[in-house]
Length: 142
Length: 142
Image (cartoon, rainbow over all chains, first blue to last red; front, side, top):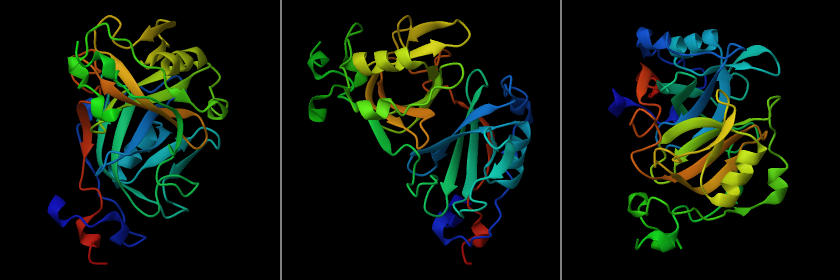
């Protein structure tokens, strides 16, 4: 099926997503916090870019799995929102992963339209706070 | 400098990190929540794998930037912890990014040792809750 997948930008604007195959036993291991939320990292399925971080409650996670498009809970507006509903920048879901202790998700998507950020940037993480070499070069010979 | 970088696994176990160059104006735009925390997505700088999600308070973020290794605040234990301090699975930081509204970070690291997860998996997100095709194939021709 993946060989038939169209680039996200060639999909018609109203194209619905496809329901995911769900491992129900694992759904029960998702731990929602005191506010009923789980943090969700949305990542580009093709190139691995972290596009955005948002929150799902149980119903938003269900809708995401059932519709194949991302749904979140807005903590500020206190309402459900479907990514791209107004902007057209939809996210079609390929995979949802759960972390070891069940309190975070990674959502792998085909990003439609301009990108994930309301500013017009592709990723919300377009600003660099700090940069360094990572593993120190002087340790290489040890 | 990057051409001199050693693979993370070849660095001696006690190797310190290198302080990051910080854009101070951007530090002031990080929005810590009511509990004083900001969610931090740790991503492999080489292959883009999301390794783990953890939380930093202001001091943990400062320590991360100053030491070039990841520091977090444990919500359950209510204490600072440096990744790899006990396991040896250290994270050397190459870059810290801030999202558009300042309430989430992406931390790009060279992962040392076995990986990021206490289970022995490289990534904490080793379980798949749902899978699907992403962009629907039948929309390709539209």
